[in-house]
Amino acid sequence: MKYPENIQAVADLLPDYLGFIFYPKSKRFVLDEHKDAFNSFMYEDNLRVQKVAVFVNESLKNIIRIATDYNIQIIQLHGDESAEFCEELQLLGFQVIKAFGVDADFSFATLDEYESVCNFFLFDTKTSDYGGTGQHFNWDLLSNYHLQKPFFLSGGLTINDLPKLKSLANQLPIHALDFNSKLEISPAMKDIEQCQLLIDAIRNATK
Image 1: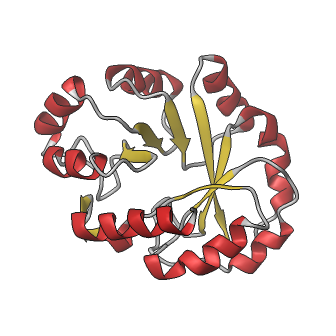
Image 2 (image 1 turned 180 degrees about the horizontal axis):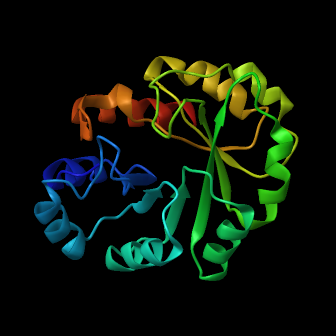
């Protein structure tokens, strides 16, 4: 999310979280040529949803500055950040979501050192860089997940995935579903009608 009217329209649907990408190489980078409008909105916003700031290998100083500027308490780390780095943010009072790219070669043992210093994990499709693919990874790999730490599931999720996702949620500690690219008209511009359909479907599925 980065366009004020679009942010407000999605927020009015009351999703649990909205994500804002503070990674300059992303096509969804919030501080590009639209940053003045974004800044004005975010400094004055009264959103009734939890805001998540997404960073990739950013310095601790900049994360603290940006999160403070935009009154964001949840930090998603999507790079190569260490467990010690996550712990520093937690000790400063932030909730930490640590993202991991999953493919057939991913070792879930990697997560052990992060378990006590993150509030949540996020599992996305493995790529050669730090961006999303808009594609699923093989969810069967999640059978190798051996911890109780709740996680976000990401990677090209669509409304048609909800039956399978509901089944997975009965077996695994899925905390939230991260929908993004399949709801977009263009990068960071969400289709409000599709967002409404999705949110209604999720709420009906969980009744």
